[in-house]
Image (cartoon, rainbow, N blue to C red):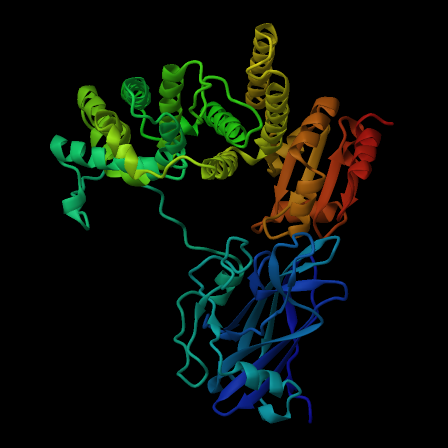
Length: 626
């Protein structure tokens, strides 16, 4: 084996760091194969062309004189977990990597330009690489069989290469997709057509300008619907569909489901004497009244406030109240305590059966509304375009549909005979419903912002303790004074917990984007913290998640009065690169502390990955002289 034809390279441009590059050429039939050897430094890895879940992909631009971009074959990277994000799967290059490009036979003796864009990362820092080289294709070329990389080339040559697009975003842009460029025909399927533009424009990062949105964006459209027969276009159809949808709400998961978890109460109140029948009818009427009351209130609130269906539940306060109610009802069904007044378990010990049934109807409807979107979307979409009176009528139709089973039980009590008879199974059923309710509470918790989850979980733990204490010491046989005092104390505690969760938090620290004009004008006038970061830098994101957190930055801003400036290297920025080099670095992450006064020309620099204590010590030394 002898070495393939090697060609000398001339460096045109390099940024942030250099990766040793060597080019070999060999003849493969009617084509010329260029092998681009990259030597990844020890302790670093580069993200492959198909990078995976993180990192900036490696992109090679190979162009002949005149701007003809050539297809590139990329080897697959080794699959591994990202160092700072174990949930992210990446594909990495390590050691020596060979990328290939195919040139037409007439390229012999012609100049070429090679552009390389990649990201090197270690467990401490990331080095963005953007290099360009020029050279001339050698006149004398050995056959490909004599090259040391012949085996690698034969494995890749039948796969689909990638052809860079000179009209797209630059290869160095972090916004570029993981599969940069477009697929080119496999080798032997014909040489790619020359693309307009020049390789110099491609490598310099010139991208086509996006058209701005037109002013006065107004459209006159006549939409067509895939199934026009299901569209609501009249009040009669809206009422019919509303009743059916309301009936189906009884089986929605959010209500868990209303019809089934009320079976126990209906059956326990069974009996054939007049008193039992009267109580049975009262229970159903009061429950239906609660359903219709809530739908009436929703129609008035949404109609008068000009809100769409579901907007009320975007309010964190309403979601939190709903979550607490569901959680308390779940604890009640699990036997932790008996929920005063509002309880799903109806029996002989109920002191206010009418009020309990009415409130249970209200709560059941309140729980059903978040799950009603798939059923009521078309009906309410039409109803919200109508006057308030028609909107209320449609809401009443939905309420009648949801209350229909209970109204039927009220009119024909004998229908209850089709239900299973009471027995020990009902206690098991109550526990199962309790767990379903806790599952619903978990779902409602997931809707709230993530930053409030720990606060809400703390409140739920406190509520659980209060519920257990109530069940232990404030039962039916407890003295009235104790029950009254415990109830008031529990209510105040619950109210305080809600206020604590919903309290406004301090504003997040405000980052100013780096601009050379502002930076030079403010340098020395106020303390400044500059963070060099990029979207493709996993180490930077790790630092922002562990050290430069919002809470810490807010406290440090208040203590030192410093300004936060973010130097974003996601896209090429010559001023940012010049500042990075002036700080004596070619890698990120990097944080620079500029004090006010004459010492601003001697900033304190923290390179690569560092800890909270190191940054606090550096700020104290820089900003206070401590």
